[in-house]
Amino acid sequence: MAIAVAVSVRFFARLRELAGAENAALQVPPGSTLADVYAALRTKHPALPARDSVRGALNQEFAGWDEHVSEGDEVAFIPPVSGGARCATT
Amino acid sequence: MRYDVTMDPIDARELEAVVSHPGAGAICTFSGIVRDNSRGQTVTHLDYEAYAEMAVPQMRKIGQEIKDRWPESRVAMAHRTGHLEIGQVSVVVAVSCPHRQEAFEACKWGIDRLKESVPIWKKEHAADGTFWIEGDEKKPA
Image (cartoon, rainbow over all chains, first blue to last red; front, side, top):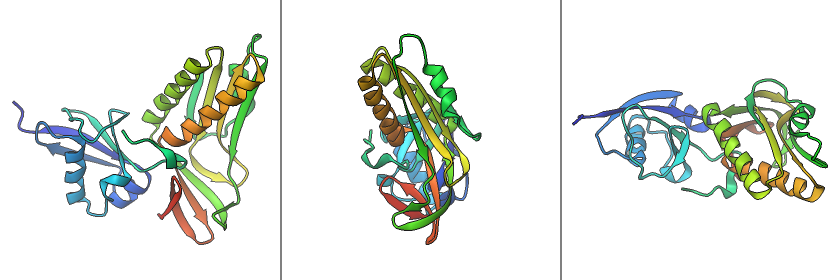
């Protein structure tokens, strides 16, 4: 059993500016969800906004906050898109 | 079918040629253009940023949704990224169908879905500052 899973994180647009980075490599405990990954990132990058204005994506697909991450996953945190006022949350 | 995220200027006629075929009696093309004002302020230029590896598959998914609803349609979409000046084309959706009514409907469906679900962001450089546009909100960049 692995003691940690490594994921690569990508930030875009306003989140990229707030994080001060385009990419981050992160190790999280096995069984972590997208919500856990974002919480870990917020401790490193306190300027990142609360989760309610952000959507998560896992390997280039929108994904719910309770989805689990696996070794090597690409995780992205996505601010609302320009015309996305009616965007459904998953 | 063609789905592009590109730094280069978009030629709407090229996308129309992609969807054109002898059974298509109607081609409806939406072109989004950079406007010189927003929320009562003068806009000088825009920057678009994309998550391209996700944006293109999302566009393809929307194209499939259009095909599911309008089986005789053909679809092409392109979105530009980078620095855009007033009057330049930022996005084009071209849809062909046998008849005009479904072409109008499918094209509207396509641009509405693209705007809400394709990860491309707009940074507005305006008289009162620089902002990321997130849905109905503008947030300082």
